[in-house]
Length: 208
Image (cartoon, rainbow, N blue to C red; front, side):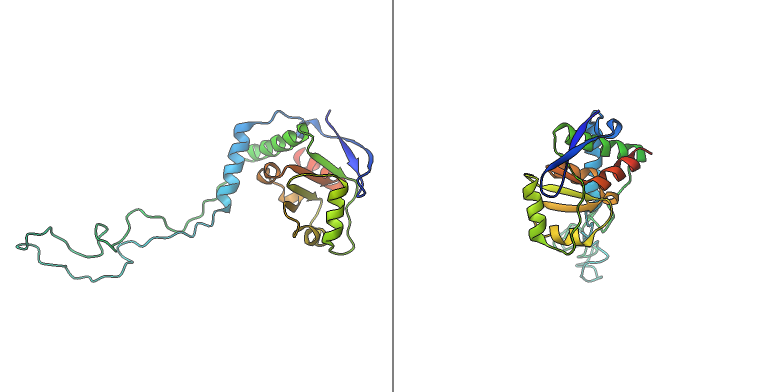
């Protein structure tokens, strides 16, 4: 069964925790991880792109020239797509790119990402993380004490404004509650930093 060290905010190891092997000890499924990342990025697309059809571009409704006798090709409107400044055929229009994956696929992707981090030794657990007030300097000190390198995903059991405001100005550090944990963020950050309560909550949710 995989194990992880338990640290306090001073960076001292105060114990060890056993990780749930069904969540942190599975064989990562690469294709499912790819599906989850693509789905996440698709959901982040704004989809506000737009082009004008021939019904929306400016231009007269009259026929440019008479049908016969000019020696030129026949045309009915300068708003035709073949004219410069005319409408766009099959161009993009505002849409929602988001879509859903089956629940089992989403859960397998999360477990695969968590297991990959655990196998790499990139999971760090804090026994407790409480800040009396938003203090970026204090949060920087905690991260320095833990000797964490690279981008950090900090996972808390519940939304904590003091922690969020303390970490939001630190480059490479992102804070999410357990409810907001997703495959993309886990893979996009080198280290996964969880509080002890957040770890218990993750195992509770993914064990159902």
